[in-house]
Length: 181
Image (cartoon, rainbow, N blue to C red):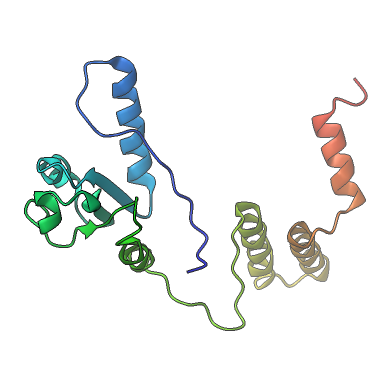
């Protein structure tokens, strides 16, 4: 639906005695905890699959039963709980349902016609900085302080628009390239 999203394929969540695999599972859980939405996929052709992910379901999580094209007991619905998305990655059946669930799970609302979407973190940061500069102007009475905050606000907008100030370029050169040492 044109939403900017980032998918991360993490390690499978399973018990293991292997230290490296345990670290992968730990990292997968940490990544999932920081995510806006989690998609937990299990093998729908295996009758034990639903039981394996039962403890992972909850708010902010979509549970998916894959391999539904194999026509096993899971495909008939036994072993799959309510709300589980049944699909086949091989045939594509059910992917449209998953896509609708992802959009709904992100609580996405269509932006107003004249709104702008900021998809890059540096653009959001620059706009936040600009807003902060302009917010500080409200309480100021001295023209020189107001002018400085407005100048800083314009400078942060320049970072979004691609305007490069000579001072910025020199700051980067001296900071990053050890000139003059």
